[in-house]
Length: 184
Image 1 (cartoon, rainbow, N blue to C red):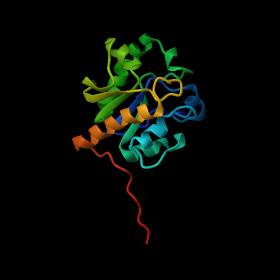
Image 2: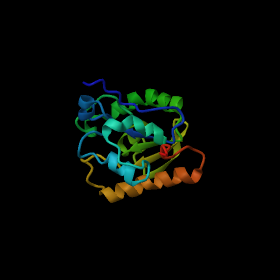
Image 3: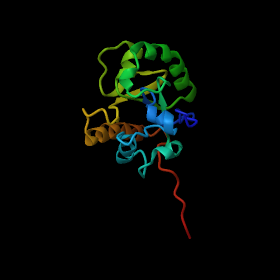
Image 4: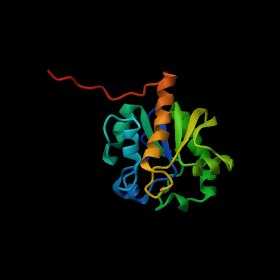
């Protein structure tokens, strides 16, 4: 393991993208969403969260865009489906405390599985999740994993763009592109 730090967090971010758990590739190379088949970095760029397509090694730059990354369960596995529902329930108190401590405007769950297991609600829809989670607004977005072929790239971009637009329309955050350095 290469000193893997799954959390890319700071207080008061616009959005924290919350995965189910780290993939084994992340634990090996030290970076989130690093599997070549994962569409996370492309989707963030195409949905307008970043002004360039970041690479997994650039993950800490997400903070400059008002975005962060975390996972409900910290144990890496080959597939998210390897995490049993009980593990989400056990992880919930610590995860809630983390979200309260960092207080993002929105926590965006990547997929329904973790939120369903933590809340016990069997039917959770896509998009804004009411009543929120851990004192913050919550959204449920399709998981960008390459294993999730139920959603084409365009579908993922559309879903993530809806969240970005909602954040921009609320106008109370700092969603932005990093400052540009002018030459000359």
